[in-house]
Image 1 (cartoon, helix red, strand yellow):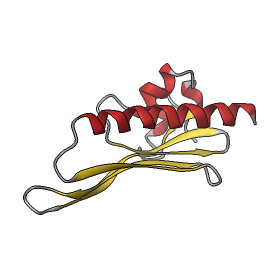
Image 2 (cartoon, helix red, strand yellow):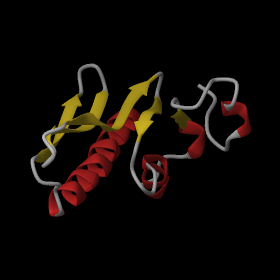
Image 3 (cartoon, one colour):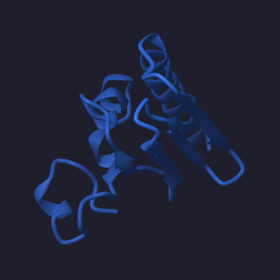
Length: 114
């Protein structure tokens, strides 16, 4: 349980870093939102708003969750990759699942299969 609590802190810190970066130069009319659900262990960074061309902007920047004691990266549209930041913060590769990759491709990565 101590490991899961540590992973929660790391995930939140990583997503907060990306949120700060988005807020430094926000596109006009677009906001970022952090959504942390510790009860279900779901962590999201999303953006929403309207572009200057009056087009709706909405989408997931990053979605990370804890499942079976591992960190599952469900969605990642960051430049350097959430997994890289997780590793740099102390999460071992064998505890990170790149869930956005098809299950049959995961064994060929350096990360956990599931």
